[in-house]
Length: 544
Image 1 (spheres, one colour):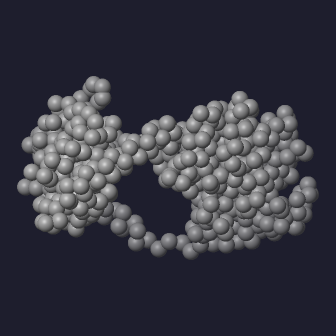
Image 2 (spheres, rainbow, N blue to C red):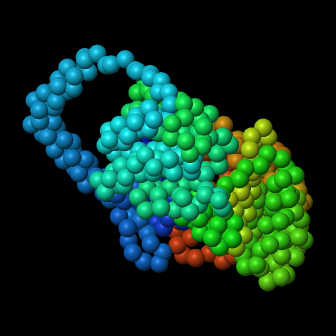
Image 3 (cartoon, rainbow, N blue to C red):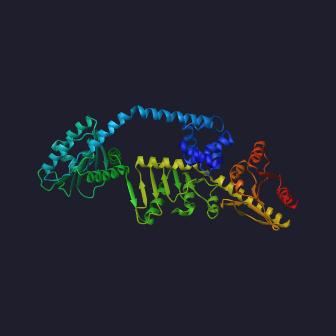
């Protein structure tokens, strides 16, 4: 049975396609570290670990401790026996409990035949009627009460005694959430509510009130008289238990709640004169650039930046270098290509710490001194494309996101090393091509070959015998890294090359395990300590 068919059949044991292929690979390879799995299946290290952990939890692989940690496949017979035992147990449980299951279903089915009540809508006119209704609604709270209102309304609620009802609900363990506007003139009236409710700040453009009880009923009041009068008729409320209306109002509340700063932090800011925690959104590129420049200008300790590449930033690398020159710790996570690498490499010897982003993202992220963050979405042209916040919870979350990205990145020095390695491979490949051409063969650098499955493969050098079109030599060049990685990478390619010969030309000496691995996958490897010797050895292959 082929490895592809075996992997396909294993998906019936609760594995996804990737997990099944990894299990088959480890079964054939023996104890294998996660990095080899990542390279073999073109995964990032985190994704490979997740797949291996899933296989370990399903008992398809076991962890072998060491440096590095390796994973070994459980014998397939043991896996099958375990699966069969689990299925037998499930069937036994189902057989033993089927009567109870059916009775429960029949009870549910009979209950669902009852005709639901029609949604109700009622209008309440005048403050006294509205407050009496609120008191009744508060009494009906079983779990959660959500309230949006003005600070003046909170004061009126206290005069009516509704704050005592909220305190009683709090003592009963009910969840009470209040959104209201907090400013320098009214914070003292809001502060006591923090003792028995969860209170957060929201900017209200007009006096408004709505209350939601357990997601089952809601009262909405708009354009109300916000004076302290307890008898005004200019306070009209719409009450309903219509599920769709109440659900929509709940979504509206929860959306604002998730972005709102808590009352205690806002009040503390008002007391101390510190900036109020909040989230702001901006729509124009000019606003975004101005805020970005202002934030890095104020930085005193640390600046963290994520950008697709250096050209997407609203400031130059020189501006960022100037910030680092003031003693600010600057970390830049970006991606480089042939166009941007020279510019980015210019700052490799500056205080700026640059790392190659493992992920591809168009987002631009800036965090300053761990106190404020800026997030720009370049492609959201018609939307609020820039978000700024100094809310501690939001800032903390975004810093954790940056940390995850940073830990997956590679230092710029590694990117420069790889670029230098690629240049050396290209130069050596050109010399090999010239050597083949001198021997009368045709050669390309790089060269593309179509496999028997019609998939195209690219090699550093492709040489052809002009007298025999089927006589082709596919060559990968290794200059300063072990050939182990290249063998693993090409192990599934060689069978698809048909009549084409494949080999690895390396300036690095081989280890015993690499020779064994190459033999296992029928890959020929040629080594020389010098470029001249390597070219000569390759040319001799076609002159025989």
